[in-house]
Length: 280
Picture 1 (cartoon, rainbow, N blue to C red):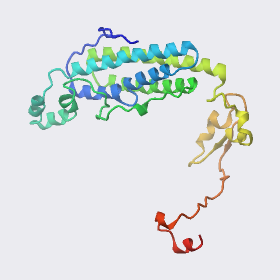
Picture 2: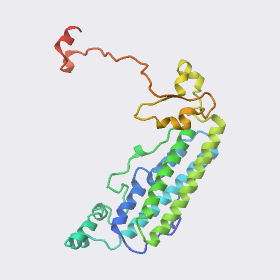
Picture 3: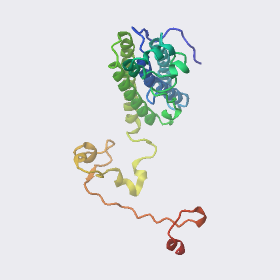
Picture 4: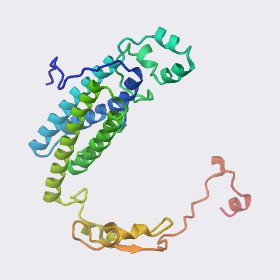
C-alpha cells in the first residue's frame, strides 16, 4: 500500500524563476539516471525480491523515498517556470541576444505540461522503462543501483554549478546528501552479499563449472594500441575470489576458426558470386 503525504521530504523554494534551468533539471527527473529511473528500479527490485526480507525492505524504503524525490523535482520545475508564457518568449525573441537565451527553453513546458515537470529528459525524450535493471539477482541488482546513484549524483553536482540560485542549490544539496547515503547503502549491501556468496555473479555458476574454459578467466588480451593497460592489477594481480592469477598477453593470437557460412538459397537474394552459387 502506498499513501501520499502532502508535505515534501525537503523544502523546495527557488529565489527566482529560470525556465532554462527548468529544462536542465528535466535530465535528473526523467533522464536515464534521473529520479524516475531509480524510483522504478528500486521498486521493481523490491516487488520481485525473493531474498532475505531485509533486502526487500531496504529496496522498498529507498524506492518509496525516490517517489518523493520525483515529486520534489516536479515542484522545483514548476517554480522555475513561474511567470513564463508564450508571449514572453515571443517578446524576448525580438532581441537576438535574448532569443539565443530563450531558445534554450523547453517548449513542452509551455505546450504540453502547462509549466509543470515532464517524464522526459532535458531534450524532451520520454522516460524509458528500458533504463531500469531488476534481474532478480541481488548482487547484480545492487551493483546496478550503485552505478545509478553514482551517475545520478554526478549529474546533480553538475547542475548545482549551473545555477547561483540559493533556493535551488539548497534543494540540490539535500539531494546530493541523500544520493551519497544511498551509495553507502548499496556499497554495504554489495560487501555483505560478496562476503556471503563471492564476488562473481551468479555465484550459483561457480568457476569450476567452466571446466576447460577456466584459464580464459585470467587472461588480459591487449587488443588496442599501446601497453599501458598492463600496469593495473586487472592484468597482473590475482583474481578477487582467489581462484587464479591474471596474465597479460601483449600480442595475443586468435584461438578460433574463420567462419564459413553455408551458401543460402538464391531466393534470399544475397547477390552472391555466380561461381560460389555453382559450388553450392
